[in-house]
Length: 234
Image 1 (cartoon, rainbow, N blue to C red):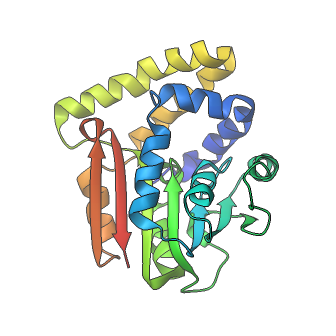
Image 2 (cartoon, rainbow, N blue to C red):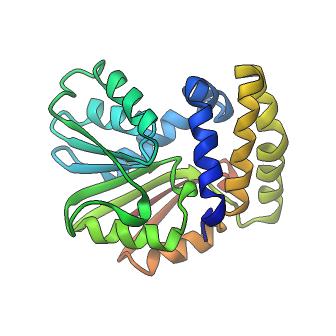
C-alpha cells in the first residue's frame, strides 16, 4: 500500500502549492489540524527526546514540538528541498531553535540514519504520501530506539461504510471548493489529496500493519474516523 507510481506526481503538486500550502491546509482541515498535531505530540514525545519529523514540510509539527518541549531536538526530513529551505527561514521565529533543529532531504523508505537513533518519530499529515507504506513502517521501526515511539497524525479512512462515504464526498468535492476559495486556481491543486486518500488502507488495516512491527499501537479517532492519530511503541 502507498502511492507507488503516483508518488512523483504528488510531490510535484506539493512543490506547486508551496506559496499557499499553510493557508489552504488550515482551511481544509476545518481548523482542527493544529489541535490534532498537539494531541499526537503530547502522546508520543517527551522533553529531551531526539525527534525525527518525517515528511516535515514547512515544519508545523517541529514548531509545536519545540514550543512544548524546551529541551527536545528535532531533525526535519522531507524530500522537497524547497520546503526545507522555507522551513529553515520560518524556524528562526521559534525562540532557541537555532541549535535544536537540523534539516535533511530524504524519503521514508530509505531514512539516512543508523539503527536505534531516535527517541520518537512524528508524521504530521505526511504518512499518506509514502511510496510503500510497509517499507516506511520498517524504516521507522529500524531508526527508533528500543523504547521509542512513532506518532502518525493524518487523514483516516473510516471502517464504517457511511463514515467512509462522508469522508470520500468531503475529500473529492467539498475540499476542492474550500481550497479554491482560500487560494484561487492554485488551491484546486489540493484536489490531489483525494488521490492519496484513495490509496490509503482503512484505519483497521493500517492498525494491523503497525502491529506487525510495533509491540503496542494505540489509535485515537476523530471526526468518525476521518482524522486519526496512531501512537506506536517499539
